[in-house]
Every structure is written in C-alpha cells, then in structure tokens.
Length: 322
Image 1 (tube, rainbow, N blue to C red):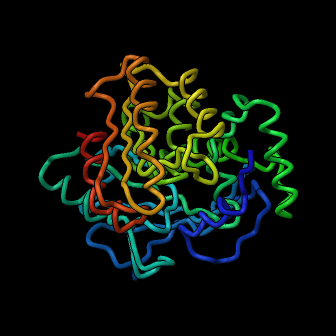
Image 2 (cartoon, one colour):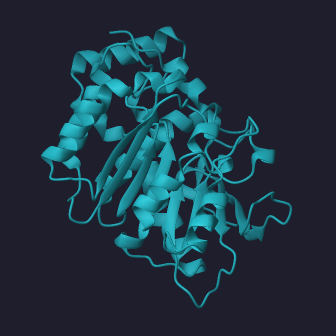
C-alpha cells in the first residue's frame, strides 16, 4: 500500500509561514499581552507569544475574552487548534477566519450558549501533521503497513519515523501545561463538564483523540471536516482510516458524560469524507451514544476551508455549550 507523507505535510497550509524553533523547551518567560490592533467583531484577544513546553515546540497561544469578561464570573473553556485562523482574517495566510468571536458573542447575547472563553493554540506549519495525528492509532496497524509507511517516507526523502509523531506530547502540553495556566490566569470553570476541545481536518482528529485519551478532562469535542483518511486521501477506504476507527472502538469515553460533534462537506478535500459516515455512526451507536450526545452532519456543497467552517460553527457551539 502506497501512502504519501509529503501531501500531509502540505496540509499544514492552515497557518502562516513564520519560521519557528523546532526544539522543545521548558523555560517559559512569555507574558500575556493584549492585541490592541486585532480586528475582532467583539471581545478582546490576548496572546502568549511563545508558550514554552517540555513536551513540544513552543508556540503562540491566543485567548479570546468576550465583551464584559469579568473575574467575578466563571467561564467555560474551548481549546481550539490552528489558533491563528480563528479570529482575525487580516492576519491569516489566506485572508479567511473561523469567525469564532462573531458566533460566540452572538450566541451568548441571546443566551443560546453558556459563557465561554476560547483558547486558540497556533500550529507550526512544518510539524502540524505530526502534532495532530492520533499517535496510538498506529498500534492498530498491521506491521506490514507500518513497514510500508516507513519505506514510502524514505523514498520521499522525508526520513519520518513513528518517533516523529507527537500527538501524545501535544495533548500532554494542553492538559499538563496550558490548561493549568489558563485556569490559574482566567476566571474559568476547570471541571470536565466545562472544558471542551475543537478543530478542523487534522484538528478534528486530534480533538477526537483528546477526548479518548483524557476523558476526565474534556467533556465535549467539535470535530469539523475531520480528516478520517489520516494521511493521503484515497477513493477507497484504507488501513490508516481503519486503524483510527479501531482505536476509537476501544477507547471512546462514556456517553453519559461526553459529547461529540462531527461534520463534513462534499467538495474539495471534504469530498473524500462521506464514505466514512456509516462506519462512524455505527461506532458511536454501538457505544451507546445517541442524538443528545452525538452529531455527524453533512453540508452539501461545503468545501474544506475556513470560509465553509465559519458558516456553521454556530452548530457545534450550540451543541456543546447549550
């Protein structure tokens, strides 16, 4: 089976091309600053320019606070990947944004959702795919497939091994370093039922993975245009996607205390996703999930872009924070 790593590294285009250090460091000297020139619909955007970690490469973290944010109140928290694309289209690589501040503000104003803040974790383009891959899914691959992946990597001149994947370390960064900082710095509700995670494409995969790996920390996930092929998409289902589903079968958290939102479009890269609908539904239904804690929606004509996601982000926000 031939699977190209190179295309997955190209998927990292969901961010700016700013050069970053690629070595982890536990020395954190960053300070929170307010982005006074951020172009927002509402609220305030604060930034930690280089949040150091002992697990992964230091990266920028943004924190969006709604209008009227007060230390006297308590807020739910949504952790989101590809953080540089969430709020301000004037600073993104393709002049698109998710409009998270618009939707969250509008929904809170009409009491459709609970009060929340949003933590946007910037990606690093060069290693985005390696950070966002559900690492333990490799355990469900046949050894011949693993060997084929490594051989293909060498042929592409990428020299990628399974040790290069950092999905587990990325989640340790969020749960052991970033979340404690957020909970101590802002007026949050730190319990599982108030802590959520979300993203698109590979960000959808790592959000699902976070729920399975840390069910005591995360109570819900928004997995938008989730990249079920895992690597290069193919017309037929392959062993990579099956390994991800097998991992989920073995590790999904209890439906009584967790909620999952999934969706997909039908154009561009999203056109490869509808064939996974039945498999995903079966996994969740077999685990006892139903319409109150599981959604998997199709959006006809929607493509794989922030311009599509910002037209429907209100749906997972309402589903998770109602």
